[in-house]
Image (cartoon, one colour):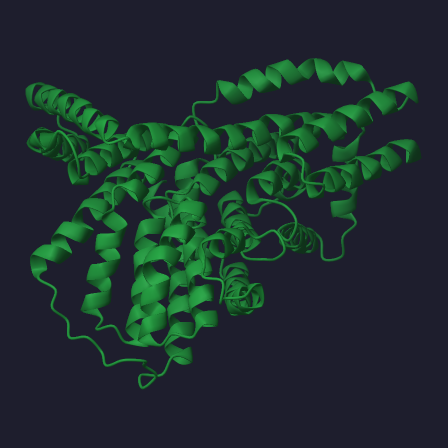
Length: 507
């Protein structure tokens, strides 16, 4: 037993060393456990027959219909980011709020909250905010440290505000771990945990976090702090509708179809990808502009089809007409975007991001397999039971470990390392799995802001002017990390923030 514990410790140390060495995370997460397994076999403390289960695990990952939603949500976000809708929204918001420091900062926050529910891709969101909103905030008199913090923190809102790729991955892992833990505890018919549950559970905590950010901005920036006179609002109602209605309708269609029980997460992700394709094709500039009426007809037909689904009607003829218009509009949008060079770039970015996610998922399944082969699951269960405070002590341990790991690992890596290894002892208790999942999502969001490996910081640094130093960026995000920890504390003290909405609309 001592030898197995020693190998487990060496494997975890080797894992962190491999990731920090700079080699691709997928290779480190898969390679270190494999080497450890062979060394353990040579010393008689690991049975290589455990590795026979790995092909079945890979097949399970690649045939999981839930994980098919990941590339679809990524494609939705990339297309929306390239449709130039974001620039129009932020310009309209800034003019509506008059260009004061408070107004500019709050407009960036409001814009980020909306775009977070549309894209959820941190790199694209942060770089876009740097290029579009940073000059405007600096001109309005927002201090550069505060502007840096607002952009970095706002750019990560897509990880907690649904529909979120992070919540999809968490839903998959927590659903599996919860089922296994409950069956082990003697409950052979537990209520399943779905991604829709996590989407509903994360909605109020995500809005609470936006409210905390807004409160901090209001306290920090005084009305008299301005570098230039406020600009009078000259925004027409038509501009507001044209800028905000399309993405809001798309968000409502995707999220509403999941929460309303009309579509599964994967089906809603497909709807989002088609909607984003139609929106990008309609708003795009360049060739084949004569196709815009057909694209618009497809978008209207898509909304009509969603409305028919919510109404529960069986109107076959209108549904067939709507489906035909959607197909024609989609082909027209794809043709226009292909001629404009958008489709190739969007597909390449989608493949890159999705490949990274699935590579980590498959590598982490090998890590979990070797971990169990060394008896790590029993060791973790014993350690959790010995924690002072019982279940709450174990929960504090997991939350503290996730926060610390956020300084050195990416969120996807943490999900597929921590949840399978440390989640079952907690999910086998009476604690709500939805609440636990939302707690993890809120905690994981800080990993994008904590140095030295916070990805939001990397993306900001790559696009920001040279006169904003790395120290300015770190000092700017520090208050927002504290605000996230405060939000996490509120969520721990009030679990109903995460459990009330799912129990209301999904049960």
